[in-house]
Amino acid sequence: MPVGDRLAAERRKQGKSVAEVVAATNIMARLIDALENSRYDELPSQAYVRGYIQGYARFLGLDVPPLLKEYEEDLGAGKPRTRLEEVPERTVVPMRDQLHHVPRRALITIIVALAALGLVLWLVGSVLNRNDVPPPIPPETTPTVETTETIPGVTTDTVPGTGTVDPGAGSSDATTPPTGDAFTLRVNVAQGAASWLRVTIDGLKAYEGTLAGGQTKEWTVTRDAEVRIGKPSEVTVTRDGTPVASKSVDGIGVITLTTSGE
Image 1: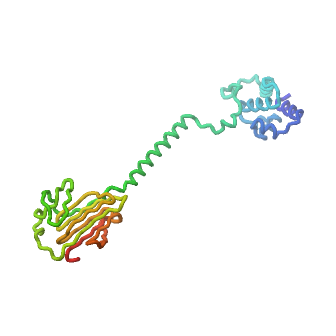
Image 2 (image 1 turned 60 degrees about the vertical axis):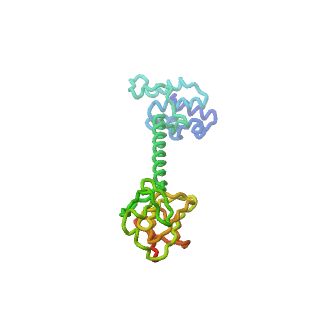
């Protein structure tokens, strides 16, 4: 009796349906029907068919080796088999938990790629979030003074690499009489912020550097003053206590004041 007929007869004898066989063995119903009716041309390779027979027989409680032998006889066991057919009988249908198995080497490759991508994104984010670098400074011809004398009435601030403000050095305009009343220039940086500043008083550089949040600088201006600000939104500039607005030049806030009020 063909092996398919034996399996079908035993199934009916035990009162089991094809649906129960499908649920227990994970073999599709159309393949079970082809196996029971010996339609081997509708089945995959012989290795898979052996696996179907093993699973089906175990579900029915039958001895597996006799059924595999009958299957060989059905096919004509006397003919030589090709290398593709010489598959160990232990080859069975993959278990359900192995259907989506990922090879270890591929898994390691995926993990390394994700780690590299995460590192690149972190580095890019670090660069984009760095907003404390002062913007480019437009070229100017303001002289840099490196003496230790001070301007009468002007607060002296030492700037690294530039020394202190000297009214006698630089241009001869430093001795030009003021054209109006002197005023007090005050610069204040908001708490929790910081900004690059360059302050020129009466034609001479009085301060250049990064001022931290909450700090204040103050000078007395006798002729004119210019303030360049890296972050205008974080800095308040006042003239005798009155706030002064800045204008944007190449992305930098610029304030120009004179004693004449212009």
